[in-house]
Length: 216
Image (cartoon, rainbow, N blue to C red):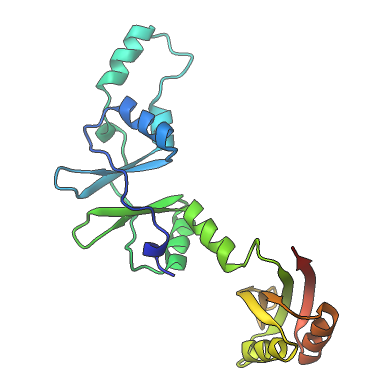
């Protein structure tokens, strides 16, 4: 799965000269938390977040009158509050790499740019969460197994063969770090198997079943 499979496209963008109030209204209406900023050539020159706009809003404790506030806000443009250095991704980037970048940089979304630095989409943490939910088979019925297995060649093949021998079908599978460096955690969802029999077979293989539950 790549960024292009999950990004929102076309992206909604604004320009550096967009008034502050217009940008804030657009965010509220479209329920966005960030907007890419592009120049007249369509090239990405910055990004403005909901937090940037809220920080630029006046404090309730201000001594300015409502007319003074409206005047000042009317003069404020996006270029005065945007972040000019933008972390981006491309449509051909694997989705897990985009997610890793978001985690490492502590950001909730990435503009997707082409070779000309034109914004062709946006991918957000919500898009990543939706992909994760699908990959884990959430919402699909079946037997959900959490296993701790030795980190060696052939483990997944043995697991799949055992499930097939029991007449089962694998719905989803994911792998995660385990506390023991010599092991991995597997999250597997299967259908068409007897829970007790499969658990017994997997334990016999050397796979420690940490949890097994039927999901509706």
